[in-house]
Amino acid sequence: MRVLLISSNTATTPYPLFPLGMSMIAAALKGAGHEIRLFDYLRSGTSLDALEGEVKGFSPELVGISMRNIDNVNFLAEQRYVDDVKAIVKKLRALTDAKIVLGGAGYSLIPDALLQATGADYGIAGEGEALIVDFAANAEKGIYPDERILGPQQRLVGEEIPSALYDSGLVDFYVDKGNIVSVQTKRGCSFHCVYCTYPLLEGHIIRPRSAGSVVDDIVHLRDEHNVKYIFFIDSVFNDSEGKFLDILGEMKRRGVFMPWTAFFRPEGLTPETVALMKETGLVAAEIGTDAATDVTLRKMGKNFTMEDVRQTNDLLVEHGVSTAHFYMFGGPGETKETVLEGIENILSIENAVHFVFLGIRILPDSALYRLAVKEGLVSDGDRLVDSLYYFAPGLDRDWVEKTLYDAFSGNRTVIYPPNAADDKLRILHQMGYSGPMWELLLAAKGRRSRGARSSVQDKER
Image 1 (cartoon, rainbow, N blue to C red):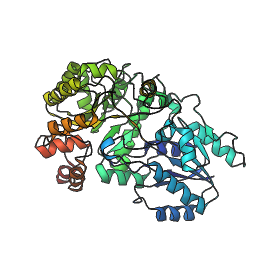
Image 2: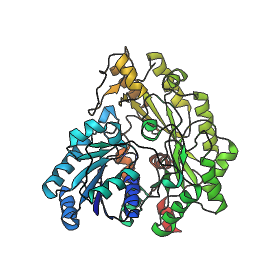
Image 3: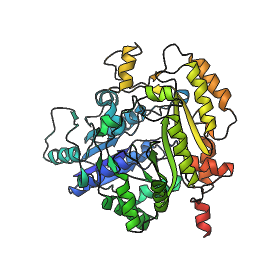
Image 4: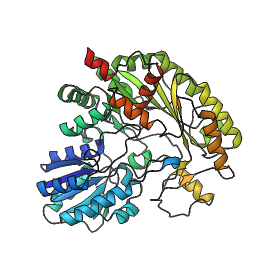
């Protein structure tokens, strides 16, 4: 069966992300014997004419659309992506009778409302590899399910989680846009952050891929695609069960060094662990701090403190790792006092880049959603396709916005609002710098981690 898979993601902040979910679906379908064609809406310049050419040239019998995000979760400069998917579906309707199936992390958050909003035929909520293979097998026989939304079903484990199909054209595009390609080492998240939807999508049980398969992916990207930088796209790389150590051990055993970055939780790291990470290529770390005081951390469902954050940051910096922290002001428990304390805490953490958000996007079925219902901010049953942000009741939103701006204006390593550095980063990428955005900002300020090089420097070697 001819299956056209479309990545609808157009987000480029903090940098364009390789469409890993679509590529894993592609691998599953190809493994089942189907003919696959990949179309990346961002790579096409968001051109519906380019999509028309793809459809006419391939004549798909089934179309899948991956929705990675609903919006950019930035209250101060909102970008919404549902309209892009609606336009793609409308264009497809004019070109083909093939059934259209939605999937992806963004779609799975609000599957019923998004299916209705976009006009697609079917949707797959949650992990889609097994479900889409079954759907395609039945579609070949002209059999379609009565239910329009499929899943979630029993989650994949171990070797059932496939390697991605790393299409050369797609890899080349994303390497050119930032030199970063994504690899997944595990699924699941054992933590309970009030706003987060990862556990809803992937469950609370950690399901690691085999270390050998993960390192095979890295070697493949390095040797076959000349990739220079890996992003481990797990919800948290340093999981509390220590599964991440298997990946590091396998990389060391096989002598595989690849510059990499990942999401980190600010606790549980030791000098020995960070040294092993550096030995395998760790260059930069995204630290999910999320709140800036001990009070607001607890209200966000965190079990670490600001002292843990400082110690983690200092440990990584001592080993030459560039760090970035992300904070959301206005969440549960936020007051004027915690805002002012949080500003002081952020400014006290040195040799790092800090990205500051205002408000927290409310997503259905999260603990924050239930709190918002209790506080009368939303009605029970609202699906929230249109973005709505949580602000602590009684907190003056305008005061918080102005206070944050006054505190951080002119500070080159505290980015508020979080899109404020976009133009600068695009210029740096065009000049040949590679890597995640905070590494580039620190480089622009004159500090580079000891383990990192720009792609310009690589070319001079």
